[in-house]
Image (tube, rainbow, N blue to C red; front, top):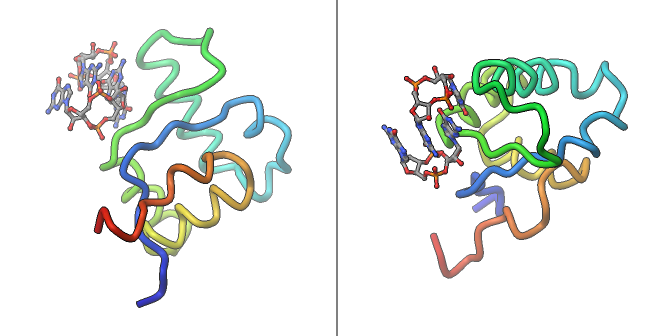
Length: 89
Ligand code: C2E
Ligand code: C2E
């Protein structure tokens, strides 16, 4: 087991996302901006996205959903609580 399990609830920290260099977070930032635009929701400090979206983003980043979850926690874009507890899986 790699210990990298996909997040079950994806709540993106938009303020943190804006602080990170575009070469790292470009695709994720564009994805989040598109969802905000589709919802007409520009006011939040956080953005909840679909579990399905994490899978699409993982393909874009050439990672597994679990690896991308770890990366996003590492960047501070997801809170550590996004990492599923071992008992949950
Ligand atoms: P849609 O998928 O046809 O969803 C229509 C409306 O159903 C949404 O309008 C929203 O009010 C509600 N809805 C659908 N799924 C959920 C959900 O899981 N939770 C909640 N609370 N409401 C839900 P809204 O928000 O104005 O979004 C408009 C369109 O923008 C959506 O049409 C979809 O095509 C796209 N969209 C919005 N958010 C996301 C997202 O997180 N991921 C993806 N892939 N598309 C999204
Ligand atoms: P949530 O609104 O609490 O929804 C939790 C889960 O219930 C969703 O997880 C999805 O599996 C299911 N669900 C809720 N509403 C719908 C719906 O209209 N159609 C379908 N097919 N399933 C629904 P999921 O997809 O992982 O989304 C996680 C969170 O992302 C949602 O939590 C919501 O906060 C946000 N979200 C997702 N799609 C939309 C959207 O289109 N519009 C808005 N405003 N928020 C969305």
